[in-house]
Length: 234
Length: 330
Image: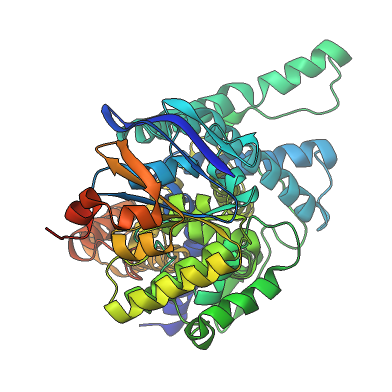
């Protein structure tokens, strides 16, 4: 469904992503692991059109998208819930969610709004509150809900558990599992490697802008290198 | 003190303030989206007034003064101002979108001078000259020379007319200005808060990158911001013409600076702030002129008081009266 080939991305003179290639098949959850600065967020931002790559190709659903502006990529069914949640703080919850449906041309946003409220009842309770007054976990639910409002065929989640309490993190992870069960294709960037790999069909480990190795989620979970670096075990 | 005198000054202050407010919205909306102080915005107001005059010369054959000319002129003025603003955005600011902040600021000052000189040199001679090529000496639409501060068309029932209540004179042109501000403010409120494009504008102002991830074409939103500001400035251009009877190519400069002051006063980036800031600035300017006695009184000092207020606000309340955009990203 998504294929990235030999992608190179720079910020000014700093090369953040150095020739990486990976693929996400339809219905899969694929996880990108790596320490801070490994290039995970840059990769996601480039796939969704916020950065232009120096070289390489990005294909989504058989169409090359690496030269398209960001707003045209969402229209093709690839949604991105960015790092740090990035909800619109001075807009209400319902306005935030409806902006998630901005790219849609059909009239089905109402049904998806109901589905998001079902997934996260707290959003329904607080639908008329400005989103900036929310706790981190609630903002994360809003960010995921907002991305779902575009009815994406594929969803990219950047650090959905960052800064959350353990309880809230469990909620978010079980929501991602639910989405997976519904058949949503997901590209997941996550600090919490054990939670991410438990869900992932396949994982890629990034180190300073390159893919160091990759394998199925289950194999990576028991891989010594992963256990030492990302699961904090000796 | 004579209360009628005080109320007269109040009316005059609100009228002047409404004019500032209509222009100030354009500064604040554009700043809210791309953090650019568009110093050429005063010229958009001036161009609007000349656009209204041109519309009257062509569609009103320079003689119709019936009330219905006013909406016709309004359409012409808005059209000319919006077109000018969009061209300015496309060809002067968009190529500099990723340049250091100073580049578009200096460009704005350049465009301001360019537009003044363009109107000064071209407004009369060029359209008249082109017509002479086609029609000979007897041209159908004679444009006045912009250098001579041409007369603005006088509209029956609005220009020059007035009535008196309790010793306070209310000019129809002043009422037009205040009513125009109120209607524009209400219209803008609904546009920003109740429409899809309006909400997309707010989203873009709060977080442009994330707005793009929602599928919002940020370039389009920037164009909308310029167009909305230009439309209100065009309305102000007509209000100015009706009140002061003459228009000139330099009128946008000081009016633009005052409106910028108003936008900062209210909190730049905040639409309601621009309106409140405009009204407060108008009141301060008129009241200072009317009530400060002695050497510092009188209209010669009005600009001094207006900009003294700007400096005071920048020192003591830089976020403006209503507060500006704040960094509140979680």
